[in-house]
Length: 373
Image 1 (cartoon, rainbow, N blue to C red):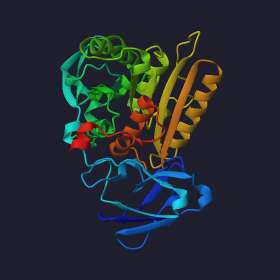
Image 2 (image 1 turned 135 degrees about the vertical axis):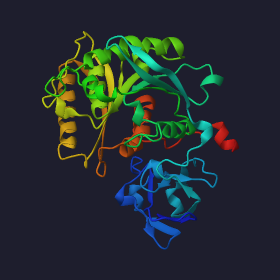
Image 3 (image 1 turned 90 degrees about the vertical axis):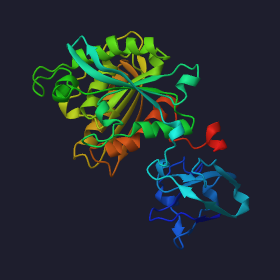
Image 4 (image 1 turned 120 degrees about the vertical axis):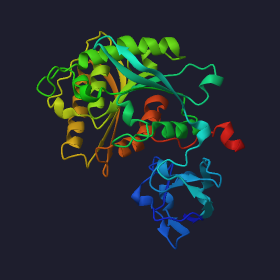
């Protein structure tokens, strides 16, 4: 079967076709189109690889670079019959690193407190809430994700760049996947390492991770649940971060599995626990916990290996009936240890953790506002 494509928006990125014939892998080198000129492409696929009804999309290497219509809106999946033999299509626009971002879907960013008191540490910390764009015109209750290192999550001008979670949440909302409240906790600057190290004075003299975990679980979460329309149960509560922020989130999930069912773990600093000696509570019935693990191959020779070893430990703990794990591991061959790559991974993690998808949305009904625009 031959697929031909004309695109009016030309750039140097290769084009791929993805669909129900390759488990929606958006960057499958077997399905890269051949370029004729700057606007025209084609691919021929053996019939035996295709189902009778072929459902597909074109991408430029990922869901963050998927096709759009002329107004920048999500396109529905294309559907053709294998018996058609040859089909032609036109793509007007493409996403570029998840953009364009539509202001009408941006989350409502509120400062919970400039100086939220941490009784466990006798310190104060700035804390934000990022609410779904329609929070104040809906009556819904929402799941909550607690994220570390708020300075690097969405604030322009942050020293190392930021995850742009406000922009990424707008994309998820456009797809109908944005019903999540994010609570962003500022790190403690000079106290960051001590607060994110659980109990290892060899790494951080006077490590305070135990107290920090209790702050989020025993102080901040009850406050958030009282002041916002949250789904308070563990099934709708997650915690996460990157680097040391990911490490303290692992501890949180293992010590409070009755509170957290979802862990977003990006580039975790597993070197702190080379033997994976994570303390965990023992319960008669193991808690089902979803863990999204991400790492980049350019983060150092041991990052990916440590993640793989950690994943094997998860499987062992599961066999011991300590946990009932469901985990997804994402390794980026180009990924280095910085906010840009964590930003790219954030929508994928949110969707898998809270919407049970293994890939980014491939067939959703765009929000009504998108259709009208």
